Image (tube, rainbow, N blue to C red; front, top):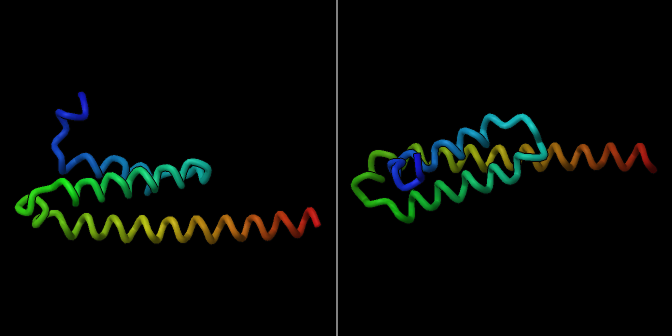
Length: 88
């Protein structure tokens, strides 16, 4: 199904779910970025009526992505510290 045929309200959900469920840390930053962009596009391009019923979901999704990114970055920093200790 082409992207144009997907209802606007669904365009952000798939990238969001992919990011939240990803187990491969190497893929995570890109998926978080894509999901964040999809959500912001939805907010910017949505009409007020359709956004009204969805805004709490969009806000929760953005907050969850922020937390996921923070956890990823903390884990990556810890990994680098451990790696530097072992090689140094």
